[in-house]
Each structure stands twice: as structure tokens, then as C-alpha cells.
Image 1 (cartoon, chains in turn orange, purple):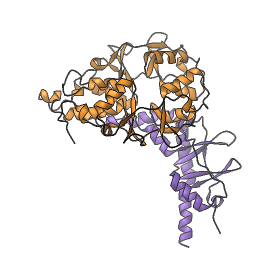
Image 2 (cartoon, one colour):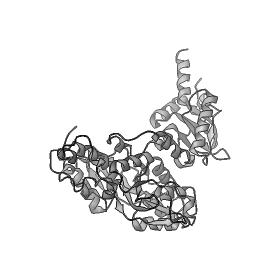
Image 3 (cartoon, rainbow over the protein chains, first blue to last red):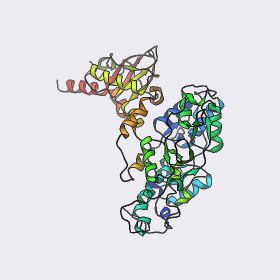
Image 4 (cartoon, one colour):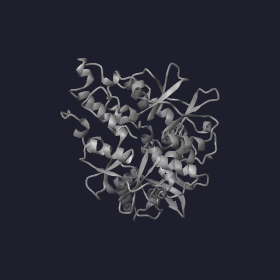
Length: 296
Length: 156
């Protein structure tokens, strides 16, 4: 396996090394119901919409589907009517650095990959795809902290504490607040999931965008209270837990974010997402500029 | 005599309901396997009137079970995996059949020639085709049954 010798590891890696090759796409005639089913089945946040000639014409995200639920659109509405397009592209041989710059500039979470302009889409690059790659390269890098300290056993992620990389603060709603309020909260704070607290103020559950689009598909009225669709398990880690334990927890629970508590699981103080995970090298190593890949 | 779907289709097939949970669907798959004395890899989903709504296949279930961040798991040393499969199954069991079924189905009619059925199975990468007559489901053609027919006819 190649080890980066350059100063900036993100410049040395190309898009094709990090991208996923499975493209989840639907035609422009597909309905919102089909788009929800695809997002849930393939566990993706976005679906590529293709035209008659297989050309990529737009993207429908879980956020767009949640917006359609909020607006009361029928499930039979064509997905193309809510898509955002055209999608943004990068090239197979672009450096990750260039691709990430493009994602930051356009404030988007993914780029579709082509070999050349007007060629078919061959992959998709999103922030979670980069986490695993960074992890691999950082552990092989000569400038890795564990090597600097002469410690060959401990991994860097075994040393970084969750409190150093989490996003502090939490926004929560109550079990009797409506799904409309939940959707407003998610949209206003740009969160992927919201903490739901019980009448005693203790964490009672979580509502993610996936829970909401499934509620949409099940035709649950958007005025229904949060407790009717929330997941009654709050995946959380201790503030002082190490990063690698949080990553393990995320893989085990199949979630993209964890809530972080301090002293007691009742006291949620922050959120840790996969994009936060990409910051774990920040301040520990000059070889990498991974802090730049935090989405805005 | 030329063979059509009618001659190779199974008229006894198990069905799933769209509001069934995946946990309940697992039980129907198992029971169907016992009845047909072979593993069942896919089943049609119908409404109360018997109208075809979709299909739930083994692949749909595998997609549901696979962790979304499995690519990161591949990079991290010593990830604790004990119990992860049971946890994935616990989550999957509460989903509904309609949440993940495939609705973009190819169907055939009873009078379709066997060679045309083979062509569809090759082109669409499907192992089973629902047979509809005047919009109503009357049978299923399985790839294994088609192949068995070819073997019998070819060795006669």
C-alpha cells in the first residue's frame, strides 16, 4: 500500500481511491415513494436522477424528501419535481484536496464522479467515504503522532477524546412536539437527527431524517407527536470516551451520529458525527489538513 | 410443441403483505422453504385483493442487514463485532416489507415463449418472473424450473 510522502496527504490521494462505485439512481419519472424506498433500502442520503439518455440531471436528498413531507406533497409526485440540479461533478483523477475544496465552496455533501465531461457517472464521493481512507493513511504516515512518541501499539484514535472532536451543544424537542416542529428544527439547525426528550427532560429517543421519510411513506400525519415515530434508543457515548470507541459504536448501531453525554446519560452535551471524525488529526500533525474537510 | 410460461410456471407460491414486518417475512420465507423443500430467495408482495405490488428478494434483505459504514469498519483495527449481526437483525425485523420491496418489476403473460422468458432473465438479471393474466397474478416462473426443463428436454 502506498504511503504518502508529500506534505499534504489530501493532495496525494485521488478521488478514485475514496469514491463509492455503486451509484443509486432513479429515472426522472420515479415517484417520491420510490425515492424514499431507495434511500432507505440502500442507506444513502441522496439519489441521482437520470434522464432518458442516462445523463445525470439532478439529485434528491433525504432533506428534499423531508421538505416534500413538510409541504404535504403526494407520494405519487415525480421525484424530478423536487430534485436539485444539475449535480456537481468531479473527475476520477482529481486530488481529494480539489474535490473537498469544491464541496466546501458549494456547501454540498457529495460530488458525482466522471472520467471526463459529458461521460457517464462512475462514482460518488461523500464525507463518510473519506473517513476510512484517512484512518488508513494516517496510520501509515511517518508523521503520525504514535510514531513521534515512539509508541508503536496505540493508534491515534485511541488517544483522542470525544470531547475534543464533538460538536458541542444540543437542540432537543419534547415527545409531544409535532413532526412538523421536528422538521423545522432539523432544517433550522442543519442536523441529520434530533434528540427527543421526555416530560422529565431526560433523553427519550431520536428522530432522524430516515425516520421522517419512513413516516411520510407510511402516511403518518405530520401533525403527529414525535413519540409516534422516534427511535426509542439514544445511541450515546461518554464525553471522555476515546474516538475509536465512538466509531465502533457508530458501526455497531448503524448510525451516522452519536449523542455525547457528560457524567450521566441524562446530560447530553453534544453530538459526534462522521464528519467530526475526520477532524481527529487536527492539531496533532502538520502533514494533514483534514480539518478542512469539515462540511459547512 | 413449443413451451410457454404456462407450462413452466408454479401456480403454488407464497406471498407477503406490504404491512408485514421483515421479522414476519423471515418466518414466511422459512415456512415457504419447508413447503417447497428448497430455500426461497424471493417472494411477491400482494394486497388483500391479490394485486401484485412488488417483490422482496434475498438481495433486498442483504442490503438492509449490511451496515452503512462497513467501509470504515474495514479500516479500523479491532472493532468489537460480537453481537453486531444480532443487532442488525433486530433493527431489520421492525421494518416493513413495503419499506424495502422492489416495485419496478418485469412481469410476463402465460403465453410467453420459453426462449423469450430466458432472454428477459438474462437481460434483467432476474431469477423469477411473476405471470399475469388480465392483470391478475396466476403463477411464478423460476429460473431453476426453466433450467430443469431445459435439462430434461436436452437429455431426452
